[in-house]
Length: 77
Image (cartoon, rainbow, N blue to C red; front, side, top):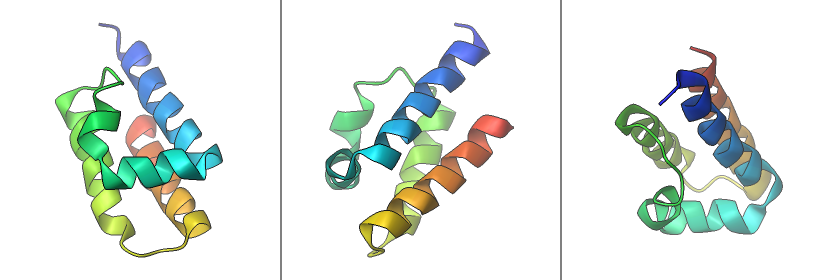
């Protein structure tokens, strides 16, 4: 699989989490079932799970911004 295709799936996930608060809430509640819908590498999956763990009890807007920052940092590297 091409690296840019993998990164694109992660970008799609981040984008959806940014604009869909219900999706972000579902992602926090049941991350494994949501992540199963995306073809992510083990490293990308671990990055998403780590970012979710750091979100804690932040408000919806704060959660989306924190997730975006953590995951976009991963995509940029």
